Length: 415
Image (cartoon, rainbow, N blue to C red; front, side, top):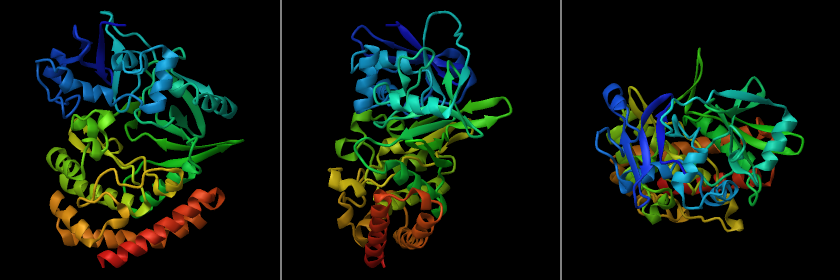
């Protein structure tokens, strides 16, 4: 295992990550980065010359890695111990979320030219079929990809209907998410929720369903990438667990993860457009409640850390989980609303308590809750009968019913 890793944002070295004699994480900013840049690696790691020790630095880096079964498969395939975060970052940290990448510190300049391998649709099907046994293509020569989360994903470069696989330092610009193996209709579910969110007015990246032969996948544009005349540029970002220094295994509020109060406080204190972003975050909370997304935790919200300053990133991972309660999926909310985690028990008083806790006028919150419930009732069937006419499935029928019931119940309670 390498003695140290160079941590980069885009092409610039931010600092070094190494393990001390007790195998604990240590991170230190480079002098050049401190002199030339005003952007921190994380809001939890403000710019300073002294090293950050394990309890300070480890949460940020651990949150770059995949979780649960995906992590276990990658660790096994690469012959890296399951809990060896440093070893995994060394092997797959070349293209992480945002602009962060990690490379072995060999003392020599990093020479790893980027390139793309164009894929036929049959090639893509073959690769997607391999993800079950080889997540993120871990182990393939020239491929060093890492995305957080517990779901299978594949970063790709997509342009004018053509998919390519990124090698070396070449950035991807889209993410492919195959159907979840143990839940039906997740591709249609997520695509519908994202399309509905766009119509409601939430800021979300463009997305679509790709269907070729027997393979149907959800494809979403990366909000942490920007097209420039020179090519695709990475944008620095971090999720709320990283910003609040919370390890990924504690991402749920019940385990010590971010609460809605902590999330709104973070946006209020950090965002350069806090007024706009607070209202956007409020819309996110209401939308997730009305569409039955109980898995909206701190890793599913992010901040873009740009040169002008931090701002709330577009929303992602909008998926109704409550339509899968018959599969044993937990119904309770990842973040409590007004102290209540049972979505079926939330009343007007809980929205009012939530409003007071996050520093927004209760009347505004109640007006937005009722307004979005009415808009979802009006728009969901139009979308279902229109853009999703060719993608109807049992999961979407259950989603239509859940959203209708949720809107009706909400309007009765907050009216």
